[in-house]
Image 1 (cartoon, rainbow, N blue to C red):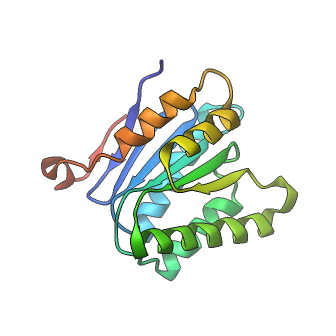
Image 2 (cartoon, one colour):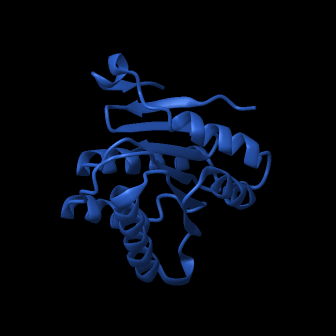
Amino acid sequence: MSSTIHVYQDETLRLWSRRELLVAAWFDAPNAEQMREVGRAGRALAAQHVEGSALANVIVSGLPRFSDPVREEGIRIARERTFRRGSCHVILAGGLAGAAARAFMSMVLLVGTRAIGKGAARAKVFGEVFEASEWMAELLGGEWTRFELADLFREAAIAPKASVAAGDERHG
């Protein structure tokens, strides 16, 4: 099994990569700079993989606030086909936050797909880890298994420790 690379972390966002997959775990609503960080990490990962990169957004918690700059960055990532292998969006947050996250992701995927047309990457929103990991394992193929992906998504969703969250941590 491949190792996980810790790409970026702050109190809201944790970015990990494994092979061609970027996992973004969200513990609050994003700001535009964090969305740009996702785009940068996705482009860097895609440059390492001939077939491109994929994204798994794991929305753990947070208040449903999505500013216009955040919406614009999400649409830009979709339009640029940053994650041309595809993406899954696992909404673990419940209540209003979960509903808002589902609505936001659906809007980004709809606008991005319309702009790209038939060349759009496959993308889907899920409400639980195992269903998302089954879909993503089929999408990625190769050596990926639903069990590896489910473990990766669950591990990424564990809230960061206060000592790590207090500062920005970047790794390889």
